[in-house]
Image 1 (cartoon, each protein chain N blue to C red):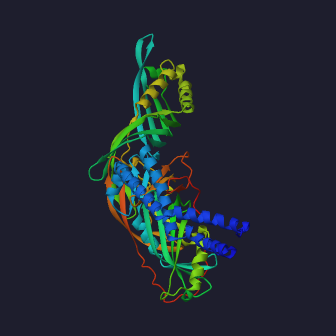
Image 2 (cartoon, one colour):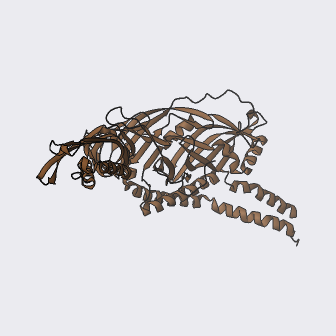
Length: 329
Length: 258
């Protein structure tokens, strides 16, 4: 009996083992079994997917591309209001004398708010779907870091009796003001429209007045105080003009505020930052696309925008015969 | 006896390539494996209640659209590894089972010979493996990773050609990455802007300057099922926006696109 060469056995055995293993792994029965198990899991997954509201809503839109935007997306704007708003106030002052109380005079305050700059920030809005592809929005808006320039004109008109010792005077100061930060509830709606490539929101906010309260900066108040203090002597009716009291009165008047129209400009048309491209590049070739809006709908889950996309070019005709080709990229 | 064993060894080794993925059965197996992996990921996500993370934006792209744009580029030829000329004439795309399958069919021949000398039918299976936003254009871009190749000999008038036999054998030995040039990347026709433009208002009592709000967008999650590629996009307008990253279509964290 001949003995088998050990080297040959060493060469054959791994090959046989591999071949056997290979035969087992790629066997039709095993493969079909795996495929059947996979199909069962697919059916199981289909049920799970069908119960997902996002999936069902998106699929219901149709279209080759569907963009869904969660219904909570707003912006913030920088605000610059050239107001020239007037605040006017006037008061008579009485002063106690050896003749009893007499009207010393009338002070008049005119404040002109020339301009207010600030940053409007929208707090998280409440958004609700409404008919006709509309989103109703209620949003608290805060004017932050509001500041501006104001001219304060203060005049003192002495009455005839007091004018014997008191003299009229006027002070005009250009000062820096600031807007008292507060929240303004704004409500309106966005009308959605679907362009060929993208989704646009057009604001529908009715004109409405908002009360803006202003104050002066500490530095400006110091200037006001100094100006009144300057008049606070006997010859200028210092007995009547208490700078602290007067300043408090002026401040109270400014805090009453004034009405400013902040109409639709608070919200401007916004294009969603996603669009369906008019072309793509595949394998170094540009493919032009024709995009048409398929659907637009607003649901409690999202704003859905669907588009149909078609290629504009025809496939190249196959050449009759081919020479050896150029190398790949 | 030793000669017989040697013949047996050679024969066995000759059959081994049939076990490789570059066969019809091997390719089907490879595709099924990817489908099984992908479906397992989908099932897990669905059971967690996070099948589609949808906080800001969701993009759903139909497989027919991607198929259409690829078909529009056909036919095309590539020379692979300086050895093979592959002409792709058909393409198909399926977004299902958590796996974006790209299938390209065509013919292969030796690059230094006219294809009249003989050619083989080839099918390349790729997975749309990574989807990310192009940092420059904002376009969604998917990278295709080749997962299997099926090369089949074509007999002319029933006559076996040694050139074709050789071609099929050599194609079967190549690494799959070699064929990446056939389908390296796919643009998905959805563009995410890097800013939102707010037009100026005024002049008038109220004047608001035009504003540009930077938008940071990043692909947060990608899934493929029901014939669609579902891309969840995280969008932020503040500095704490998520860093741009690439996400695998089979819901596995992956490296950036090639």
